[in-house]
Length: 247
Image (cartoon, rainbow, N blue to C red; front, side, top):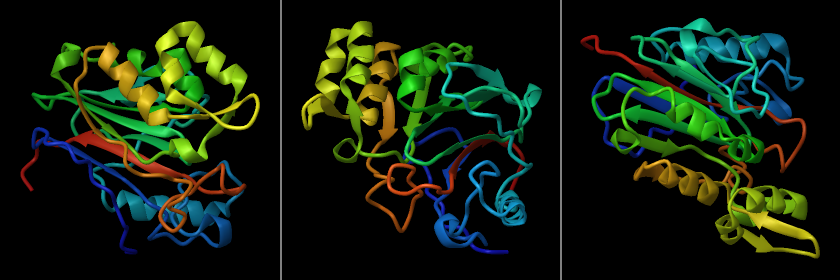
């Protein structure tokens, strides 16, 4: 089995909670998709993707539940979903049920509670953040928001994420305080801080235990895929699950 180069969350959570982010290392895909591309939808050789997923499955208690990500605020229960389900967040309380999200610049956000009996993952690009995908994910938890812990996954950093003024306006229309997460670039364009926007929204929801947010998928080209850096490109995975079995 190819060894995967995994990134583990920085949080200190209940022993039942397991999670990691993949990188581009450890798979069999070639060229722009080298090497651990997990997506069938980006033009990679389908057999290579199948092999990559099989390698990934060796690190998990069961194959992940993937969905069709559409930059929405839809959060679903993992065990009732499948790969054709249109959603951008998965939640579960079921043991050894793996929730999976793929990204290549967008932010993946992991959630759990302090008692370690609920987990979720959300796909949070700018559209999802504007639509409230984090709020919808938090609403799935029986625990109060202050009881939740959150890990921010690898995403594009502010200095490499240039956007148009209409995107800035989209957030300012929601709350004028979002202005501080946009730095002026050339005329009519801004650099947006996905990490900052996500932290702001999580704190507004009452979550204070927020970890991560130090990677840049664009600049760390040897470690991550980046849709902004080159197209087509692969996708990394964010995986989280519960497992109370004795190892």
